[in-house]
Length: 235
Image (cartoon, rainbow, N blue to C red; front, side):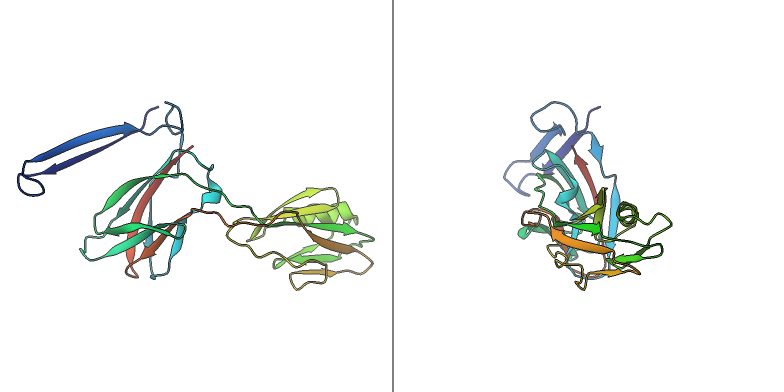
């Protein structure tokens, strides 16, 4: 498989320079340090904005760091003064006005996601519940700490992924830009145990300081309503 990007620049005499300009070049979109073509894509997509609030178009956490990713992006507007601004993290890359497009190299830099464990212990009874991140889990007929851990890990959480090892569940933030971390201790506001017996759930931070990803692709619309077309080619 080969992926080729081409660009042609033309300008009549005296339009830009004294002589007519005719420049054409092309490049194969290959993996870092190789001749093998990039093998993945997000697919061609469009996003229509409704506010001028900045948003993350691509989260670096979701892509392999420091590779030869290429981003195609276009302002689809036909109104000359409509624009949006591209940032890589907090660095302003430039403004794209109506009809502008670009092919940008992007070396994603991943962050360190916040993580913590919940260890279930003591005596749990049937119908005891654990509540975390707005999700309530009720213990079934198998009243063991391991059974509660499995049920908790299998639930769906909007902000975390969960894995289980025996009676211990490890929660990992889905986004490294969320640097908030649940308070330590089972009695915190974020984690509540309701039990008919003596079951406990103990929260502990995983060692290491969470760090936000350093170069997400961020877009700031110049107007509330505009449509961005984009596609990422990545390793």
